[in-house]
Length: 279
Image 1 (cartoon, rainbow, N blue to C red):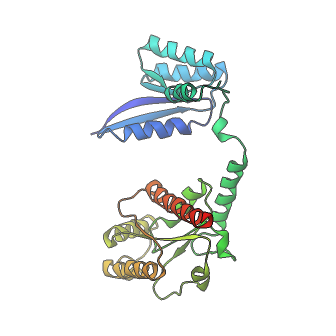
Image 2: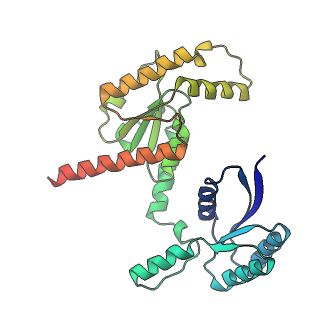
């Protein structure tokens, strides 16, 4: 049985940074689970009061990011009185930056979430993904930054959405035996086209679980047949090989890892194009 502990995440913004750091740290401990208490948008004393009451009721590790130094110090003092550990997760990095850059800080609450050009680029990318999902290729394929191809259940859609959160306009196309690939895909010049594959066993397992979750009747045995799935995957690999499209095996990859691999391919491609232009 796993061992659980209380983990309080106190932030004057959304708390996403804290959750990411905490979960990355927790991944290094097997058999340990955190009961997360997220306290976002703590910007006033009364909001901090509520967080402190919950910390007192369920003591545990406290991680925080608070720009207001008076509130941060109050939180640290209270944790010390309760005998629970606390840490400002950004403090070491901020001080390192300050020492290296030798310029004064300009603290801003939620500064990483400002409505700048990058923010609107991500929103535009997300709208693009939602409008061009699961085979709904844009009228002009070159409007996309990335086109993901692959058989059903290779996480094409969630990977596309994750890429959109990084400002990448992605669309995806299922590879289905007997259904012709749209000719527009072969005419594409701008987007990176990448194939996703996985082991037949993994795809079959995911498809079986999906059928069970939908209480679906298996009217098509080929959908979960491992030999048929192997042929679908072989078709994808052959299509990618013929067109020199990179292939990523997602059998043991998370969506984040798959997206990171695609973003690396995008950067490599851009670097190559810029190098050719410079020459």
